[in-house]
Amino acid sequence: MKNPHQALPVTTGTNAEHARQHNRRVILEVVRQGGRLTRADLTRLTSLTAQTVSNIVTELQEEGMLLSHAAQKGGRGQPPVPLSINPDGGYSVGFHVEQHRIIGVLLDLSGKALARVTLAVSYPTFEQAKPLLLDSIRDFRQLRPAGRFLGVGIALPGPFNVEGITAVGPTALSGWDDPNIATQLRDHSSLPVLIENDATAAAMGERLHGLASELHDFVHVFIGTGLGAGMYLGNRLYPGHWHNAGEIGHMTLIAGGKACHCGNLGCLERYLSIAALLEHLGRPADESPALWDMSDPDLQQGVDAWLEEAVPALRQAINILESMLDPQTILIGGFLPEAVLARLIAGLEPLSRSISSRSDRRYPRVQMGAAGQDTVALGAAALMILAEISPDYGALLKP
Ligand SMILES: [Zn+2]
Image 1 (cartoon, rainbow, N blue to C red):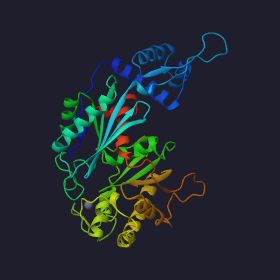
Image 2 (image 1 turned 90 degrees about the vertical axis):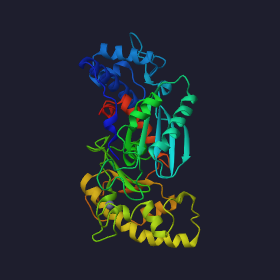
Image 3 (image 1 turned 90 degrees about the horizontal axis):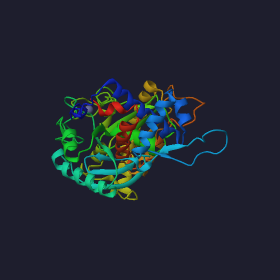
């Protein structure tokens, strides 16, 4: 699909207006990370003048984005008032659109999930999904009728707009390559819309809702119908120039291996993905492994045989990711049944030796992700909040 970011609204303004918006985002981000901070803390942490901090804090309080708490007693002069993010200061909606379902979540400004919805679909085109997305947005808004909605984040399977890869094969969703889809949704919902690839959104979901809350450098390998990796490096997402960084599914890892729909031989996704597992088992491409009875001996045998191919392929991919990125850990998640994912991860040992083979590690080299089935939708909604409040992510809303 084409890079939908090109369709996002252009924000223009004077330099002073940009500086004010930037400083607002800096203050919100520092409070978001710090929990409870006073104006003096903010002046110290942001290097802004006390007057600028005071003006922006007043503005954010009036808008309901910051809450003030009871003043701290002690000392002389005016007691300092701690400030925190007001969870009800804003809401965002996130969707994970995939081949067999759409998951939607409603988040508050503190990142807490308030509601979710799952919609059954089958390879939805944008035209088919559009009314479902708009209905869900309307339903979520009715839960907070007076609330300020910051926008909608939508995560889609990547890669975006790559000739010969994007629109072919069992993982492709057709009809999403119109560069105006974000504009169309924005026009119908009257909300900003941000589009990101699913693996990148999953990394953000894991950062905010899973195991990675303290991590500054990690990779999240997302095994869905296809395969992707989200990269969180240097304490921020690395989406890549065209929002395709980490699309590892078409790395040609197996020399002379299985033919892939992209035209290459031996792509990783042909061995490690739900599509590859279903094909290996001779099951229909639209079957959901979530419904499997894992005590069925035939199924177990089939999964065992698949793991013999999938485990070495994943081990090789981990060696490459570690060698290139030197991450604190690699998380593995997605939509495989948990029992299969656990066996896939356990089967990786012994891992290949790499620069990550260190005795002073705090985290295992590889571990299972913990944010669950909603990881991608949560990440998409969180990206929308971050785009609004964080200086690092503000650019997401600008082409
Ligand atoms: Zn391929």
